[in-house]
Amino acid sequence: MAKYYFTTDKVSRKFYGINGSNVIIHTVLSDEEIKKELEKVINLPIEGIKEYDGNLEVTLSDNDIVIVSLDAFRGYNDSYENYFLEIKRKIKDYQEYKKIRKLKEKSQGQKVLVNRNRVLPKVLVGTLPLAAALLVLLSANKDSKVEQINYNDKNEDILATAVIDEVNPALLEKIEDSLDIEENKNKDAVMYAGNEATKEEGLNFNTLVEAPKIPEPVEDAKQEKEEVIETSVLFPIEVIDDYERENRIQATDSYCGEIIRYYAKRWGLPAEIIMVQISQERPDIINGVCENVCQLTPPENFVGDYKVPVYDDNGFTGSYDEIHLDRNAVYSLEGNIMAGLIYDRLNVDKQKSIITGLFTYNQGDSMLSNACKYFGLNKDDYLGDDKAAEACELIVSYNDNRGKPKYGDRDYISNVLRYIDFGEDGTYKTTYYIGEEKYEITIANTLIKDYNNTQVR
Amino acid sequence: MEYEILTDTEGNTYKVEVLFTHYDYSLGKNYIVYMIDNDVLAASYEEIDNKYIINNDLTSNEYDMIDKTIERKMGEING
Image (cartoon, rainbow over all chains, first blue to last red; front, side):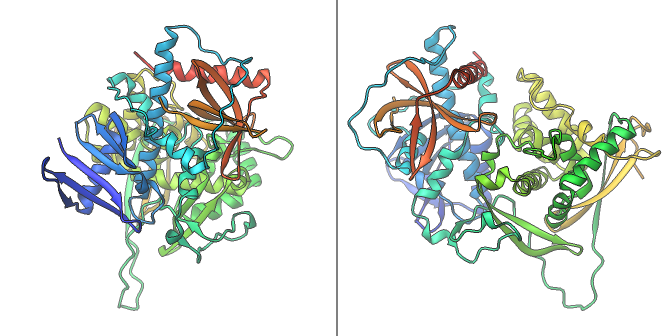
């Protein structure tokens, strides 16, 4: 059993290992150790949470204990920000799960309905400011005890932290806004062009997308030839009627193609694949209007601050778009597409694959990790386009095993890629970026040509 | 038990146990489901001046939606 302490000195997060019992020794952790433990907190089931003195003590299923200062959940512009967002979401899910379970036990199988006629007793107390109310929501009231609940394997699906869920995260997000974070505000924010609604001073930036390494300057004046990593994947994709395919794509292109192409290119994603993805996702365009084209569920989940790497024809430029999406933005056409593509970018980076990244856009960005944990497999063996077919199959198996065969769209890849024109030889090739590396993927449709699992070239 | 204080549109405050919050896309509103004395109650809410202001006056459609949401969440809990 290991014990860790994640805290802050008000300026940045600090990470320690805790040794000893009578004499407590704090050992500073390396970056590798920090990320390893953060990954565990995200991926392992929680056995229990206790709250005391502004800290949460989280016990994991492997008996490791991680003590996290509530201050550590505030926005810090470091490389661990996305981990803490995930942990915060997971803790919120855990607390909700605990309450719903208690309610279910009390109901003893009876249906639980809202009492529509109750007259509420009023309480003569002052109202808490939002931040304090949310801190109480996140952690137990100091005068109360937090119960420890042990999980069995069947509860794992509650803890699987798909980013897209129906619980409004607005409550927890407001903790960062309401607490004093002046030292983290960047008043020289770079805003994406053309959207007045999102211009705002003093933004608190959360790094959602892992920053690629900035390439070293090349002394030789000649431009070096860009290296391309070639990958391939075989997929059975049910083609649809040409007329239906072209009609759907053309409608998407007319409605929002310019926006899709602009941001896909800018953020290193394959524009045509994003176009067909959104063609699959979006509702029908009725009277010239299509709401929530990227089918964000719900759009409020994507309100926040983002930092996205910028690419051009030569690859990663070394700069980032720093973006704030508020509620109006995620409901606007451009903001909705930006949010969808930011989530695409996150998933592609996380799964090291455009194909698996598309699938986890639908299933949830943690699903591959969850599936690997569930089956006792090494996630590194399922990263990359070459492993995309296996990775998608693994996620589907995970859902089948946990009793959720209809979770998301198990045929999502086929349903998206059916809008691609594979031609007579049944292959399609495109390029995209992960970090500073350029990938060229060949997708072979095995329903057009049987490749017998041979290398596609 | 964890308690929070909610404020309604008339400034009245209530000490409640919050079960969960939920955003309904089709109705376009935020909802909060909470308990007082073993009664499950619900309200819509807005964020005003950094506080949650609840509105207990829901339509039957809204109550139906929340009942279904509770049923779905309880159905997701196995064992």
